[in-house]
Length: 100
Image 1 (cartoon, helix red, strand yellow):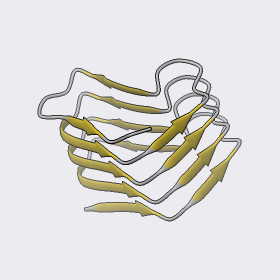
Image 2: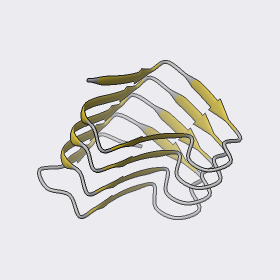
Image 3: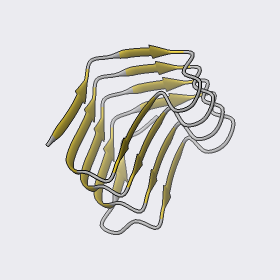
Image 4: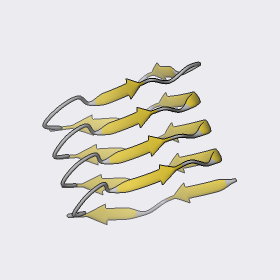
């Protein structure tokens, strides 16, 4: 299991927070501001929860999930993304709800 909680990330040169090829990942309660690419990015994950984060001014998607199964993306605030606020690609069993 991997928990990434209650962090503040500003001016990341790539993704603000990223997780790859893992199982049971929780990304919760983080504040991400001005990432060069995605604010929060998950790829190749089984059971990914992205909840209660704020993401502002991402160079690409605010939240991006790719090649992951059973992702739950809920109650995040995403503003001023250059591309999509929330993007899900090549993933099964994903629920996206109550994001602003």
